[in-house]
Image (cartoon, rainbow, N blue to C red; front, side, top):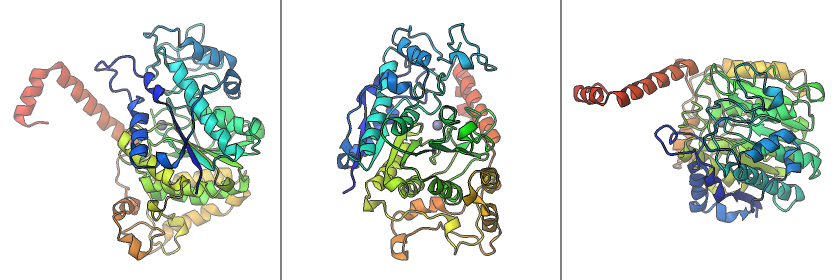
Length: 470
Ligand SMILES: [Zn+2]
């Protein structure tokens, strides 16, 4: 029986957009994200198979493992701040950042992506504290693994900067506490959220005890705009930051699993972590328009399964983003099934790189370019990667007819199961003609403008509908 823990805090719903006006109701980071995910985990019976770990508030000393004292005080000040105050603490070291107008005391002016109310600081402390409580039980050996269903997210929170809906970096605090307080030697912090964890990278950039690996979208105008392959860590931490920046949309199971099998797992095995913490955002899930990616639930499960091969299976998932609740919930269920060794998860997709029978492998546009760039750069830090670029190139030069279905560990008998519909998501992608992120952004902007115009001119809208223009 696998001992898996989960934590969820009903009170996080109190941290909500300031008002349900037409403008605010659309804020992506809202209470429904975790409530619907938790409901899904309960209804599927998965939550009942886990030990429910009570959340608690993170202490000032624990937060100080990753954040400045000023940052902590700024968080506490939110309890007394007028609700109308929008913006976030950007700290002394960030005050001079270009394009970030700040007050003398370090608060951003504007900061449109952040909101807070009187309950925000407590929700943040409980999210970080719940994550810590779960991680501590895994480190103590009382649990094998865990999943923290918490919000607000954390991986954009820097040592002294709040941004990207994030206030305290829960996953980072858990990883550092594991090393400094819970007796772990090395932690792998794997971040598969579609956004780069700029806060996590900054916190660990000179720390060789935590290997930070992030797979994310990097495109013009896409938050936070960091996470280049050339950002590899500094000082003693050189080589302990690995960024896989996807520059094209549509990256799915095939691309992520090739990245895992040719880059993430070889490096992780060399690093030999004693604990794995995952910044588990689900905004790279298929259907989540924020990311524009195409990971299926089984893709997330396959990544989790690979990570379980490390550190004796001691894996702690920490929820980050994920803005289509139905897609995020399915992905979360799949990951939890893996942590629970639930046989109903069925066969997981294998990597095309690991499937020697694969022929004419076609990955989404830009995938091989990104991976070869990262592997070339990281080869100087990780000898295990030497020669891997050549292997990667072989993938794209195999001859033969295009594959019609994804590689998988299923037998032919199993392959006829209803899961075929998911396996089809793993089919070889032929996205050479797919629109770029810029093109997608442009389409979305046009739609938004059209909607805005409609609101202003209801008469015109009526006319357009009558004319069948929409
Ligand atoms: Zn995200």
